[in-house]
Length: 244
Image 1: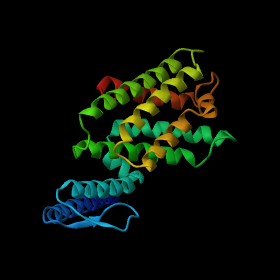
Image 2: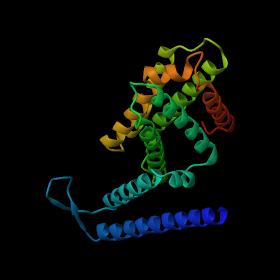
Image 3: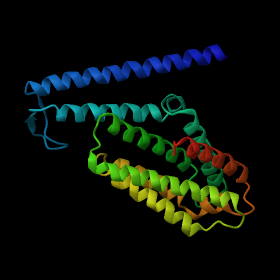
């Protein structure tokens, strides 16, 4: 069984490498065409054509292809395990368990939403990482990145505090912290990603801020407390190692 799993992982790694190389080759082709005055559509639905005189359009198209490819790959469990480190994978797995179990018990929460939220978190993380790797984030984005980091860290510490101190849970305070995260992520991605990515961001925070979800997780007699404890342990490790 272990041999079969190892073979499957190697095949997935080879598949990813092959397609990333293909995207890289595509970038080179588009760059060459752009340098030589290649022709590209002027914009979605415009029907017009424009001559590219620099490599910027080629890089944009190549980046878009990479984001689409990795977004699809990250949607699978195997893709997540290859693209995200073990500590983050554990944190996301425990967050998913909380969402899935809370949704199962609530009449107000969509049972399919936890899986969508998890995929949206992974896709947004990878796309932001691609923007950084491809030097698409400029000096103006530095403040937004720092605000995202501070907001996420603040929310994580609030969750830890509510878990460790009995009867300390205050929904409005946690929602305010999560909304700060939402605003920070929107400010970062709005100039670079599509409206669909902004919708993904809203789907994530709409679920995390939902009263039924928060009450299911943080109520004093919650059946989800052991899972919350596992998540808090992951958060603590991420804070200690500087990953959060």
